[in-house]
Amino acid sequence: MNRNTLSLGGAVVALAVLTGAASLTGGSDSAAAPEGAVTRLPVQRSTVVCPAPSPSEFANTTYTSFTPSTPRGGAGGTGSAELVPAADKAKPLAPLKQTGKSVTYTTDKPEAPALIGTADGPLAPGWAVEQTTVVDSGPGRGLLGTSCVTPDSEFWFPGASTATGRQDYLHLVDPDDAPAVVDIELYGKDGLLKASTGDGITVPGKGSKPVLLSTLVADKVADLTVHVVVRSGRVGAAVQATDNKIGTDWLPPAAEPATSLVMPGIPADATAVHLVAYATGSDDADLTIKLATSTGLISPADHETLHVKAGMTATADLGDVTKGEAGSLVVGSSTVHSPVPVVVGLRVTRGKGDKQELAFLPATPAIDTRATVADNRDKASTLTLMAVGKDASVKVTSSPGPTGGTTVTKTVIVKAGTSLSLQPQPPSQGKGGYAVTVERLSGGLVYASRMLALPLGGVPMFTIQPLPDDRGMVEVPQAGADLAILNK
Image 1 (cartoon, rainbow, N blue to C red):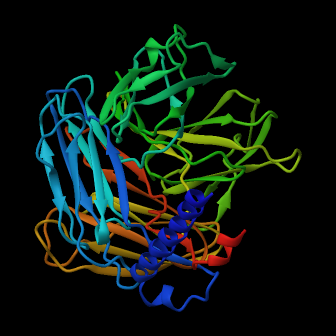
Image 2: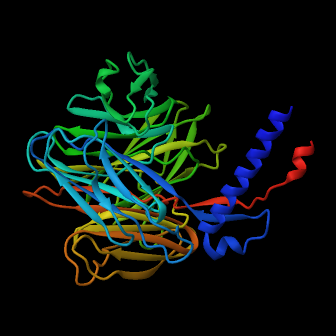
């Protein structure tokens, strides 16, 4: 009895100490919060993983690491942010030493490994790492871009394929010491495909594992939804898709299943837009499809709706749906039946003939407070913002890269139900790459993406990265020690 009482008392003291430390970190905002209230505090540690970039000997990859400046309520003290090769004790790469200015690391090694990144202290809130690869020739020719992924226990990838001419690798990276065990489920137009080796895949601790999807099933399926479920541990996941005819890019994880989803930032000159949807519930989903333009929402001709059977993948070819004006696709639920959650994504193609390139744009979560894309290039980046519900006030900040410069900010108004596309202004007096941070100031829900276009040899090479909220702030309840519990 006495031993249990002491343990409980120690837990109360430990909770009080931790709560006090959190309150100090939160600055004046947390100090003003009444007891029992919930306050928002900056995260103290962030972890991301970056998949192995490309096995091509013609590949050149740039990693860009950046943490936005936080004027109020930021974490105090000193911190670090660095990337290390998975399953290797090599020297850390791209160490970040300050907020508001990015650092880069480049490699052209075909055996370049996956990376595991950790940031703590003032460098943790909003830390973003971008991986950009240019493959200038060969079967994997193209521009591949991805934001390094926060490890989790579940991922959805609508838009993968095992068709002839496609090579899709699911890259799994375990940031922890213990191995992770993962199940991979593949869903086609007729439902779940029987995978021969998709269950119980082990990812080594502090290591990575690429899985070629076509080795899991015998079926040649043009459109698949991949569901990654982690039995134990956690992983980061991304799909590298290579098409022998139209290039290659990363397929990032889609937003969680929902009854209303947004894919912001379809390029103005898209020549083909292919929608892939999967119904995660036990009922069929009847979806509405709308395009948010600069003036409002319109229904694409002949593609106003899409029926998706429960547990199955459905598709729609939307063609050149943007008709020369960048836009965002909004998928909702028909009023005919009860809403059913779905996951959705787009495969976007630019160019024609043998001068084509593809990119993927999955549904992205709304920006609650702030989001960042670290690697931008002068006159090569296009930012798309979309507002839902109410007009939204949004601040766009361009922060300098390794060569320096002066931060530039601009505030824009995004009308409800419309898309706004703009080229971010680079930092003044700076050269080279720079980071762009989007902050929602007020108004409705805001969705965003960034397109990076680096044409090469007449091929309109490009990649699109969604901008989900950086989750740099977390809600923490105010707590205090209650010694009365010791008498219970």
